[in-house]
Image 1 (cartoon, helix red, strand yellow):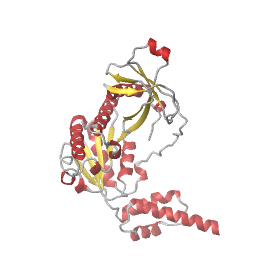
Image 2: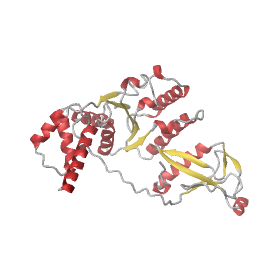
Image 3: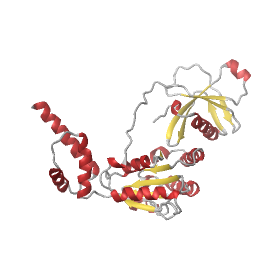
Length: 337
């Protein structure tokens, strides 16, 4: 995904400039080169554009104008190639251009009221994340584990909304790279950016979210590649360095608890493990009640309890799918009759 730069505030642009300067330090760059820069888990693509000839005569050779570009390169470009080493002292000017890409996609905020069941789990998570304002020692990391479709991701989004926290997602598939050392560098940049952002707003909480943590930190007995071992070591070192249990927290999820690295799960890194299991009958009733609020139906409470009783073993996503199918059947009947 590409995030348009114009959506960032002035302060964020300054932080992006600083981080980008460190990423380009002592690298060889050339005109029309695309640079994929990750800021707080979101990808921003920059293109290096050469200065006009008259400008090049007036400005030092190490002045590089980086322009955000979302369009493809022209194959018949007549611009000459130039190669330059970008020292750390380079003056970088980032020009944030507007783009025609439609990014007006809005994600509905999810509150705890939108989640049926999980009363104890919701209460435990809020208590753990808000202990940083008390005299108790807060957890630095929390691991949510359980079967697929039981609401782990939805619960994280709702909790973040409840405590007004910023979510920073670490996607393991975006971290992995075929180039030696680049994966570790991406992780380090992400943690460094998070810290710089935190320092500008010490009252705000930041949640580092890693879904399917076993993909990033697999159990040592199951590691087959050297890259996985290096990434696991680097990630754990960064957690030890940056997680303070006050403003920055790690919340990881997994469907396979035994596949997660045991070093990561020890106290001081993952302090709390919360199981998000298959909902019981009462939880299923609450989930169905919430899901059916937006669907026309004539089910009374007794009938709804009967549905909850007969859906033993259904996960939250299974119940949502059941409601969706019921809605489609209702529309079909309405159209026919």
